[in-house]
Image (cartoon, rainbow, N blue to C red; front, side):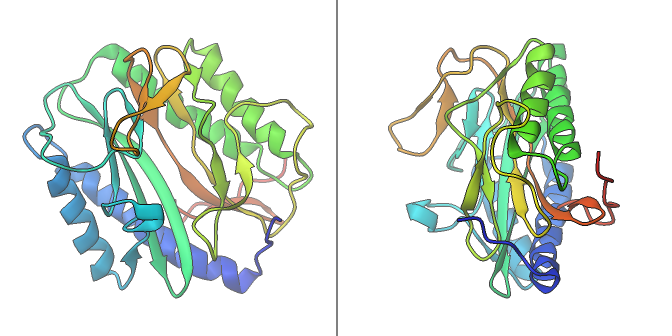
Length: 256
């Protein structure tokens, strides 16, 4: 069942989302060759707690860390550890925060030093696909319009969308209905109405769309070993259009 949020609830979700956005912005400034993924994780927990919130992922369904840190062929759910980031890597950091009983969720992929043209383009297309999807997340559209916009952007650029993993509703729970696939057809899926809050998160690969989970039962990697990128925003569908809650100061996009 899809839970619609009141303006007061959206305001509380926004508060957590701002912390997520600040965390990602700050972590982008410290990523460089030589830093380990566990150092990033420790930095995330310290930053989120300094803002009066708690990391939302720690212990969620048994996840052992505060952030998901996924490198190169790792798509999502990478467990931070001793791995050292190297020049030319790309690293996706997925962050969740909970404050006053409400969740915020966001992710971004960062370059580590100088990266290949393919990696740079993969990141750019993934972030562009996220924005194309958000533009379609307005009252009167269907969820399939969002999914189709993402898929069309990604596949038009010659990349693939992961199909085994999806975005989600968010608010009082970390994961709520509806699921938000990154592929679909225009006019299908739930009708979008005011009060829906969604975490939209294209996961894109430079090769095929198939993925597999490593023996740690968390880390999802591309089956063909190709690079992957992941961007995510939490958005609220409102009367004026759609507000990107994890992008402080963003103006609501008008209905299309």
